Length: 313
Image (cartoon, rainbow, N blue to C red; front, side, top):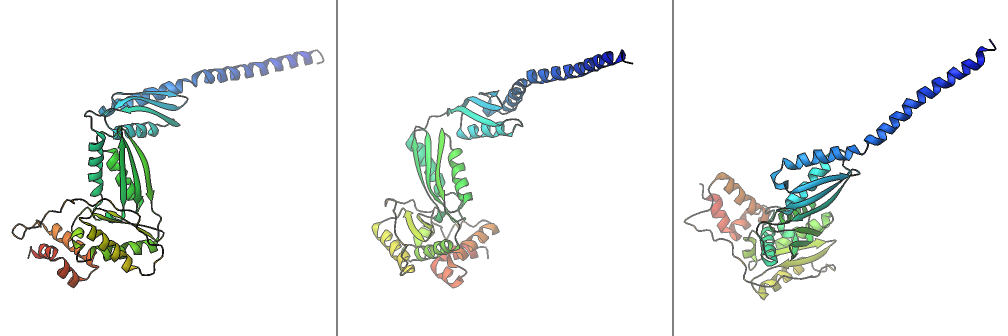
């Protein structure tokens, strides 16, 4: 028995070394296979991009789970879609976007600014567009949009317009979303009623672009817009101030220049614009919005809408 003890310990040591050897070999093999994950992700992402014709000129490489995007696209929207597509791939932890926007048709900064401004004027009609005000600047295709938005959907809609406009190379978002406040909401409605119900300023209520914009933040009232003459501007200020006698936080921040405003289309009695029951319902909603369910006031102040509402009878 005493002679067997040295052999027993020798055999036990050999078994332990044999077990630890394969384990160490497995760790080495795993370490060597790890870098191949980037190659797999690169191949998968490139296949995803090849399915989209607008991204056919974009090359993808993955370095340490960071996707590097290079190449050219035609619109800024395509550039954002490329980033979104890369982020969706499981295993990607970051994006480095070096994509360059090269529009098919070159557009001057002034033309691009006018196009965006015209689209923003009519954005979200029926959702309180008079309570938003945006300023647009363009330099070398880079659009800077600033101003105040009443809500996050208003901001998202404005950014979507800019991003989808051909010729935009990049977008700088400087929009301020106004804080939620029941007090400010009440001030907005009362100020809009005071201005747009005025007999002289009623013509602006028929313009769908709402040329007089009302921005209220923490009780501070700001008026922006385009009016036909200096008298209309003075009347708007008087009506708004008279609505809140003794309201200390009131002040007029700025106005747009007075210029020839595009008139809304005149509705002819011989060719009414109402073509369906949906148009009738829309006209009635407009009446209820501006008259606050005062039907007598609506019939007196906006007879043109009343005629449209009853033309189906």
